[in-house]
Length: 187
Image (cartoon, rainbow, N blue to C red; front, side, top):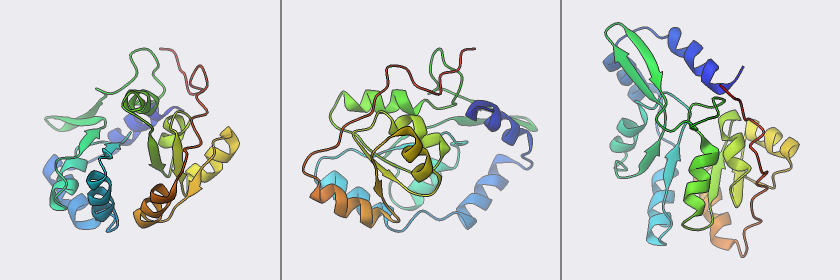
């Protein structure tokens, strides 16, 4: 099952209003405390930071706002509430491929037009972006995925680890960049 189908099945399991779900997220899903200092450090060096998510998206900007990071670019799906039902809108999906809701490959390729890209990830949805990033930081499920895909990566636990490693990088390893994303799924 692709990430789009998984997202649609997860949305079908949701109950509650947008406000109830957002309240739950804001109470129970705090932002990593090492992320705001990482953003400050990055921006002081002219390194833009974006959040790219294949999740439901509606909770990202409010979480960032509570940490004073509402200015960050967010590329994500959008959970749209139509009365009682919710559905995913995919404004950042690939125009042809339907494998992922948010095409992280395209997000990374667009960012690479401005310079080298560092991807910090942990899961399945980061897989295809990792293939096209110049530097990859991996933890959790992304470690096994990157290893299997031949993507060189640096391990991380917190954004302090990422900051220390980026600050000491001399030359990015470069992207694996296969000609066609291995997750390509035609409609």
